[in-house]
Length: 193
Image (spheres, helix red, strand yellow):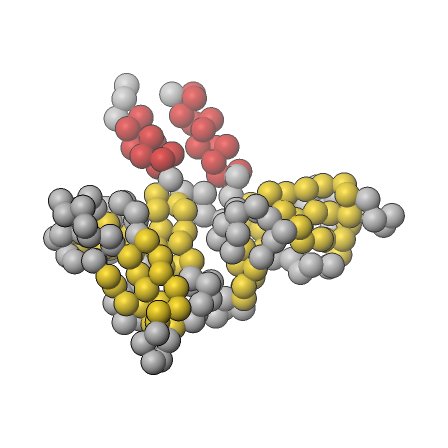
């Protein structure tokens, strides 16, 4: 029981980065887009935020996860305990890098996805499932106004689809979420004595 509680606490802590000290922010191999809400979203997996002191030396480094909301600008001054980035620790997000409209491919209800009702929120959601037909590759295409395919995103099993066929999307929009394994583990241990 203690282990499970400790794991959950650690997971909650790992949903944000706060500045350990004052300094100037530097983006290192960090690619971002501005979302329709004006938020800066990390679009790659190997980027970092670095805090530099007044002499230009690195004093802190923070790994940034794909899909994180970056709350500081490159070159901006930060103070100790300032919030730098936040992310959802319970899911992996699939984000679109381009604007356009969604076109479902090989996404058929009852065949490659099921409509499920979330027990907590009561809302229904589309969840990709294993298809008996191996030729079916559930995916979303982002198309422009002339129906040209700009980008294709494969949808893995257990992905929760966050958009519907035909929906208009902007760079940084979440088109699907995949639950992290820790969520499943929590459910299993919840029933143990």
